[in-house]
Image (cartoon, rainbow, N blue to C red; front, side):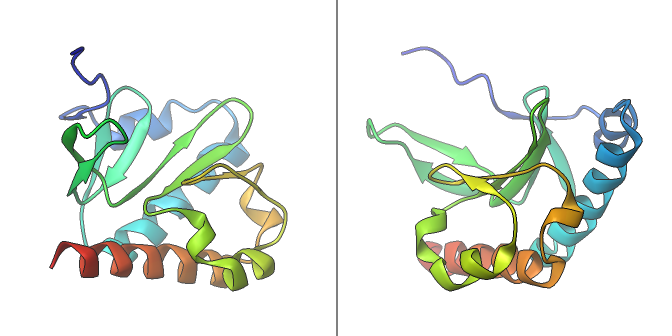
Length: 138
């Protein structure tokens, strides 16, 4: 089985975020960094070359593969900011309705810019998803 490429590493989160050329995107990323840091009470770490992750938990993939993964994280992708809400977004229908302009995948929340969403709702979504993962671990 191929080794997982997205692993926690020692690269600098601050250096990575400061390398974002778009000022709006860079500012949004630093705001998300603070929101996720507050929700997890964990220091950020780079996972792979482009994901900022917080905390960790044992994760079992669809094929039964067990690995360690981050509780929540984000990546400043070219098309949008991608926020990783582990455990799945379908668990939070009322929060998703109040969030504002976004797109979703199973555990991915895609936002063009933070001003498109309600920050209070986003904070609540991240905090709740982290709490739910912590409850599943125990």
